[in-house]
Length: 395
Ligand code: BGC
Image 1 (tube, rainbow, N blue to C red):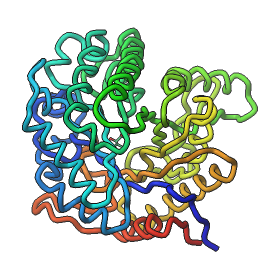
Image 2 (image 1 turned 90 degrees about the horizontal axis):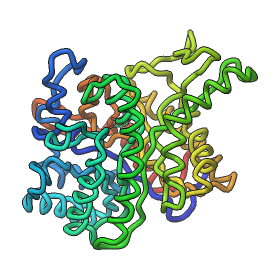
Image 3 (image 1 turned 180 degrees about the vertical axis):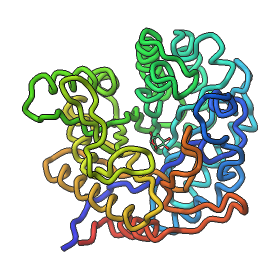
Image 4 (image 1 turned 60 degrees about the vertical axis):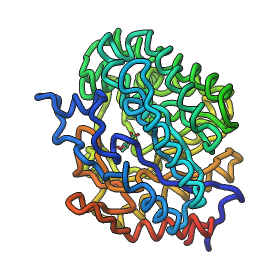
C-alpha cells in the first residue's frame, strides 16, 4: 500500500553556490582550501560548473519530477569588495530564478550557505558584530534585484555548524578554537537572521522566509540516565536550541538532518559499535528525520517545518533509496501526528564539493563526471522524481 503526502507538499533538491558553481575565489572557503594544514583534502576548483550549466541542470531536475530547487546566492560574487555590488552577478542570479520558474521549479534562495566574502572576514568575521549590518545590506541589495522571482527564502544555512566548526572546532574557516568567539559568532548569526527576515520581508516580492538548522537525533546513553540526559541537554542547547528558538514566529523552520548523536554522562560517545558507518564518519540513521521534525516543531512553538536538507553520501545508490524511503516514512508519520510539514528537499541534486572532505562523498541524485562535466542520473534520482510526481511513497 502506498501512502500519500498532502496536496501542495513541495518536492525539491538542493545545492549551494560554492559546492557547485566553481571558481568562487573571493570567499573564505577558497582561501581555506588553499591553506596548508586546514584539513581540506582538495580544492573546489571548477566544481560542477553550475555557474554556466544551470539551465540544463534545472531542465533535468524538472524532468525528473521535482517542483522546487534550493540554491544559494554567493555573497562574494555579488559583493566582491565592501559596498561594491556586481550588477552582472545579481543579473546572473535573477536569470537562475527566472530559469527555475520557466521549468516549473520554485526558486528557494539561500542567502548565506557557509561562505563569507574574504573582505568581511579580516576583522573577525562572524565573531565581529559588524557582520550583522554587512549581511543585512547584502540581503537588502540582493532582494531588491531578485525578490519578485523568489518562491521561498532561507536566510542562513546551518549557522550552528558555521559557528561551531569555524570558531570552536577549528575545521571550517577561520579555523579558530575559541569558546568565546564561538558563542559570539552564534549570537551574531541569530541577530543576522532576525535582520535578514526584516529586510527580506520589507523588500521586493512577497515570499515565506525561514532559517535552516542542522539537527541531529540526540540520544542519551543509557536512555534513562539523568546525568546523560543533562549532558545531552547542555550540548543540544548550544548547538540547536538557540537557533530553533530564533525561528519562533517565522514562516517556516528548515530542518536539515542526516544522522544521530549519542551522548553519555561524560560526553559524546561516537558511533555504536557494529553500526553501518557512512563515508562522512557518522551512522546510517534515517530515523533522524522524524525525530528532528518533531523536535523542531516543539521547540519553535509550532512553526511549520520545511525539510530543507536530508540525504546520504554513499556510492551505493540502493542504500540511498532505502535511506530516503525510510526518512520519508518518518515524514508521513509526523504528518499523521498533525505536524505541519511543508515539503521535502533532498541533499543534493548533484554529486558536489563536500567542503573539507572534497569530492569523495557522493550525495547526489545525479552523478557528475568532473572531467567532462557530463551529468548522469542515478536510479535514486528517477525513484525520488517519481515519488515527487505522484506525491506518494510506494510500498
Ligand atoms: C550542508 C551541506 C552539506 C551537507 C552534507 C549540510 O550540513 O548544508 O552544504 O554538503 O550537509 O554534508
